[in-house]
Length: 276
Ligand SMILES: C[S@@+](CC[C@H](N)C(=O)[O-])C[C@H]1O[C@@H](n2cnc3c(N)ncnc32)[C@H](O)[C@@H]1O
Image (cartoon, rainbow, N blue to C red):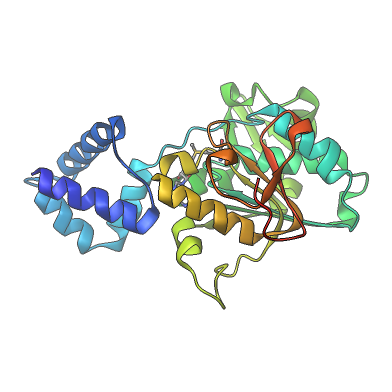
């Protein structure tokens, strides 16, 4: 039955770039076994057939196999740099941001709260945050914008008062914040495969991309391709934030590391062809 497990792992890698080697292999095996039982299928080869005959099952598989751990204001020093340098130095009253692998929404809502707190008149700005994820389940939670009380601990108290409506057990994000975020299903693999003229799959280009704690789930050659793809999606002099375990010195790249920021942030240099 290992043969069918390998087929499913290959399917996942081809369709989403997710890699299941080492300990992740046994985690995947366990999750697939649970799913097989839930569907009442005789063995994993039957699950393989079901997967090939149903796009809904493909979506369910992504919900099942992705790791969605996240939190509000995760890696606060990155939000500090975003606020104090990036937003404050923006010369036009326009900003487009991508939260790639946004999970259940804590990352894009943290970005939105930071923007609203920093700008004097946000209503005079054109602000768009595109927040994408492979998992439909995550996007549904994100769109609802409701979070249990224990998830709110890293949000500054005055932000909760201003940007959320509290309930007995938690809080829900207010509409003005929701309005600047476009939650959308995004498979980074599509961007990585795409060729001109639709290479960016219609999502456009960005002043800032947060792509944190996503590429660690890809195999190394796919990680390199993701770095190259993110570079293409960022406007000249725009910024990329990566996760703590995803420093770009592990890759060939054309960004400039912003060392003085004290966190992982990279700027796209205006002149191409410079490697750091
Ligand atoms: C660990 S969470 C990180 C969430 C957030 N960026 C953070 O740092 O807190 C990783 C997210 O990436 C998403 N993901 C994994 N592969 C993806 C792909 N190929 N395209 C888009 N999202 C993907 C997962 O569904 C998951 O929600």
